[in-house]
Length: 243
Image (tube, rainbow, N blue to C red; front, side):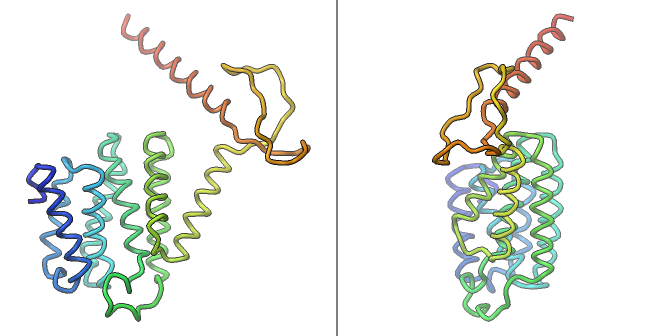
């Protein structure tokens, strides 16, 4: 049913699978290999359906210790393949799958199955894998605005749901803060003749008084550079077509 291609049927099938792994994980584990086969039919799944699929697979893979290692390996292979694609459609699958996989690694096991409530917090190996996977997604999406936006949206969705291991939540927070500061925060410099599309001016000062050595969010210069770059690409494309 999941591979039928009919949206309603796929949604219902995935919802049923999510309920089954949430309520009867040990019983569903026997059929994990069949669920894993859905990875070969992701081309026609919507982003929300991909999230559901990776939640199901991730729960089966990371809630059973070594018994789920074969599913973990297959998920890693699929995600790396999708992330390395130059097509946005497949990169999107890789980003969603990777973030959902991290969420399953760092999920509070006691809320999945009561018998696992005495399990220790996230192991060092799982934390290492989660860190490496997030870094891989970040690296593969940093050169595409669309991919980067999706990556941060997925991270926000993951954090908002809660139930994350504190180590992973701290890791995500630190990573996003560092990226934000690197990409958007600059020192406040004296205003000069603007080389941008619009006059440059600092606004909305959060301090009560103007202070030297302040910082600003670098919005207009970034927007101007993007618009200029896009315009140059369009001109180059028209010239190429004339030839």
